[in-house]
Amino acid sequence: MGLSYDGLTRAETTRPIVEPHRLSVRDGYVYLEAWSRKRNDWRTFRLDRIADVEPADGGSGDHGDPPAFDAGWLEVRAEAALVGITVTDQARWISEYYPVRSVARVAGGWQVQLLVADPAWLRTLLLRLGPSVLAVDPPQAADSARAAAAETLALYQALPADAEESVSLSP
Image (cartoon, rainbow, N blue to C red; front, side, top):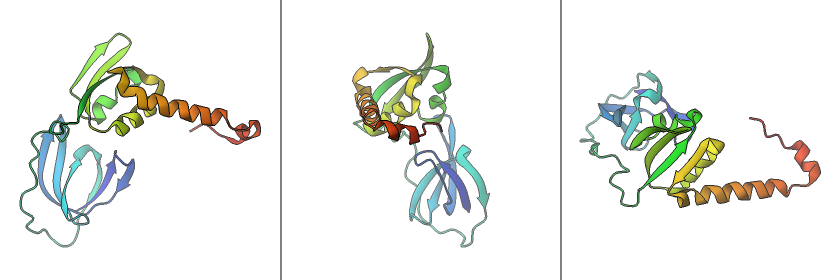
């Protein structure tokens, strides 16, 4: 079958051709485990990100069983660290898009606990959330995002005065 898949990781819609194997539930989400013809390997697709399905030619082959889908991939990575991010109501959506350990209402927002295996991913998330981030625990987990924001601001401030007029900051 051909999927129209809205992948969050790359923020793009892809159109993989897959051979479905089974549906599984993990962290409150339903996943399609399927053989990807293009990658010649097993892939997992979140069902709520599949926008469209079309029949595909070629039938299906015997690819054995997919890898175990029991423990989450983050739980089995030794380098994954537990990070708490306190966010405003507007940013609570992260608890619906990413696997989280817990979500709790706190003064002024929400405390979201999640495992982070890649500091670059956390930096990107924190920069994306911007002022909606009220606190990060441990605080040093936000150091990379703070440095990237400061570097970007310094570059912007170093622009010649006439260059600022041609820069559009609106989305």
